[in-house]
Image (cartoon, rainbow, N blue to C red; front, side, top):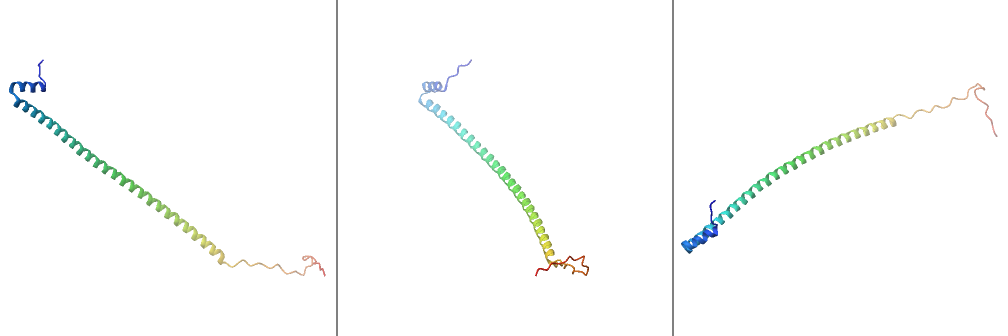
Length: 134
């Protein structure tokens, strides 16, 4: 197994062997590496945000399509209800018209003639005697 020194051990060795310049170079390299890692993370987050925005737009489009479909369904239902109500009104109007015509016909005819009772006949048995109270 190889024995690899840590970053701090490498910086300490560079400082002992090459002096202050090498130590500053090692620290600068570490800072550049840290900046690269942070930048990569930032770009990764930017990509995630972009992907989430696209998903949000797609979901909004799906929701809008679903809402439009629901509106179309409701409008079709309302149109069907209006047609049904119109047919019902037409039937009512027809029934009212027929009833009006019936009543008009009934009241336009002359009233039936009342037949007078037959006059008393000469047959006394047919007519009972009438009492006279004077």
